[in-house]
Amino acid sequence: SYGIMLTSSSNNTITGNTIQNNSVGIYLSPSSNNTITGNTIQNNGDEGIRLSGSNSTITGNTIQNNDYGISLYSSSNNNTITGNTVQNNSSYGIYLDSSSNNTITGNSIQNNGSNGIRLSSSSSNTITGNTVQNNNYGIYLRMSSNNNTITGNTVQNNDNQGIYLYSSSNNTITGNISVSSSNTNIYIDAGANYNLICSNQHGNSITNEGTGNKVYNNK
Image (cartoon, rainbow, N blue to C red; front, side):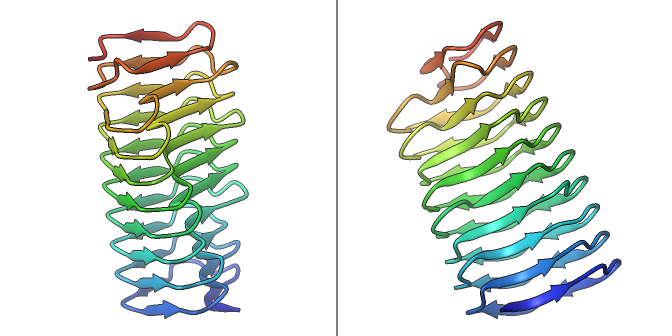
């Protein structure tokens, strides 16, 4: 069951709702140029918001106690996720799968059971100015998530790595504060190559197993 479902619908605004106790809170597929703002989306069995579409804005929502908080699938490109509180979800806070050129900025992402932000096969996204804390992993890139920019985030008190790159290359990770994780702050796995890791605070706890990565000026 869906709280709100739009199919092949554009130029809609979904605002000011409390959406709870469904399978998916808000489901847009395939729908573009929509705005989801100022909603409370909670206690849904799967995603709080599931989007398959482009050029939409998800802003100022509280998304909590779902399985996933926000998920973008199937070439969901050029979307903006900004100023949301995404917390206490049992799996991922924000999840991008095969989606590119999205902006994730200024969100509070905390106390999620798995990754705060997870990208899988998703490239050329910008992740900036978020607070990502008290998750299992902070920001996790996997499976050819390439050419992403991760900058100016505060990533702290996550159970495992603050920022983890797995089989993902040519990413830029700069100007982040990555502190107080129980494990390595930034981990570059074998197969994660030609990434730029620089000017991160408390980034001296870095594991680099890849090839051709540039790691410098972290402190």
